[in-house]
Length: 257
Image (tube, rainbow, N blue to C red):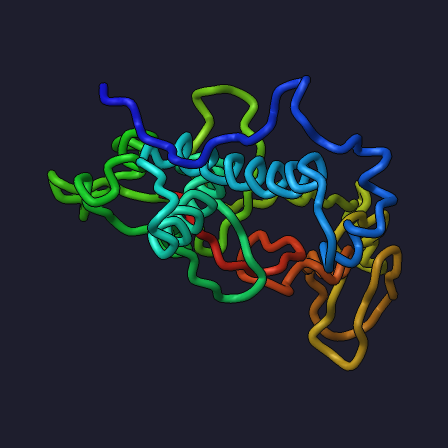
């Protein structure tokens, strides 16, 4: 493998370099006003040159290591482009390929693809992401040269308990709601309707001018009594949605590819 060329080199970076000591330079008037007249000492000039050279070398080395490209002194525009691309590349490395970022607004970022409604991507175009996801999220609509990405629409993240659970979808669901109560007594005394000790979401209703509630009954009245189940009597959360819906903030999901 060819070695890259980096024309930016350190200057006066040896321990015995002819540099004005930092303790003197930090308080020197020339550092604040610049060289205006007279003769500048070589140790002072060397300190100025070394600062710029070392800073330039550090930036050039960052470009060389990040992009594996040659870095030249004479091409300022190329150097600026390399520096920008190196920063972008490093920012990508800080977020691993396949990681999902969420935003409370719609954004578009280079190197990321939206995954709110899932879909299929080209295995060739998104080869690095394909290497991470494989066929985990493929569906019946995924072609042979494609791979699926997660469908995040109306889903929340949940930590998996086992490796096998990672990346699996879970359908919405609610636990069962149980209620109980006691009806007529043993003698089936029709003079009393005996509905009492109702719990949970059970209550008594009547098709007449009067509504019956828990632990209430009345003798010798007309109308029809029935047991009714209404979970919203336990909590207003029931009936507020057609599925299991926790309080949420809807976001825009992007995958790093």
